[in-house]
Amino acid sequence: MSERSVLTLSDGRELDVEVSGPADGVPLLWHHGTPGCAIQAEIKSSGAAAQGLRLVTYSRAGARNSTRKPGRSVGDVAADMEELLDHLGAERCIVGGESGGGPHALATAALLPDRVAACIVVCGVRPYGPGFLDGMGEDNLVEFGYAIDDHSALEAFLLEERETLLTADAETVVAGMESLLPQPDRDVIREVGDDLLANLAGGVESIWAWYDDDLAFTRHWGFELADIRVPTFFWQGTEDLMVPQSHMPWQADRVPGAVMHLREGEGHISTLVHCFGEMLAEAVAHL
Image (cartoon, rainbow, N blue to C red):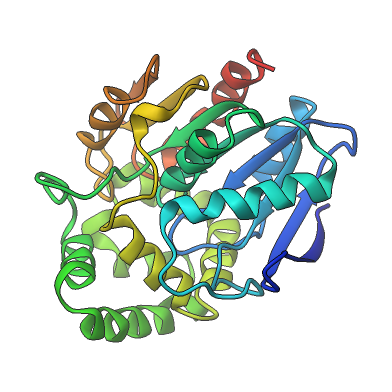
């Protein structure tokens, strides 16, 4: 069972936080996808506890009860994570993130190298540039197109998508995101959809974390991948339609010593569900 709290940051903003697992465990500081929030999925909380880790999740600025920070960069998250680790009394952590959380995990590793023992990136989006959109599903092409060229259209698009996600069941999500969900992801949503849907709904109580994430991904991230000096592990599935397979090697080639895991037949969501235990075991070895 997770404990929920609100941390007041030094700049006066509030950060929505959930913690579960052994009180003396090293934190597994996990960055949710886009959209998303601090709500912990059972697969993550039980997987972390099995490794003796304390799962620490939070809602990114603008999501659920976390105060928005307009104009934030991806790298800005590191200062929030430093304050969160200080609040927990934790000198070291393992950091991880899925999808839109991947860049934020990398930012934490790059900018807090003395606090991060290892970094896990699951189907994480790469910095924007030529080839960024190649291989993405239609919905993502529309969304990122607006993030690049038409912010008013992006706001309207996200508001419309929000209405569906607030009340969606598994079949509604599968139908509504057809262009982004290969069969492995559809199967997983039908099996463990309640946790996913709760996290999505919490993440779209307001659209602003989602909106600010999209803009941040298409601007300079506030750090360089080449500056990362902690053990970093990238995971992705061959069937991923949300984040193209090409994003993983593009990033791993720029992170010194990075390790890649490409799982045949897995999608954007199923990769984490089916491989989470392996991901943690590999990272824990570096504590």
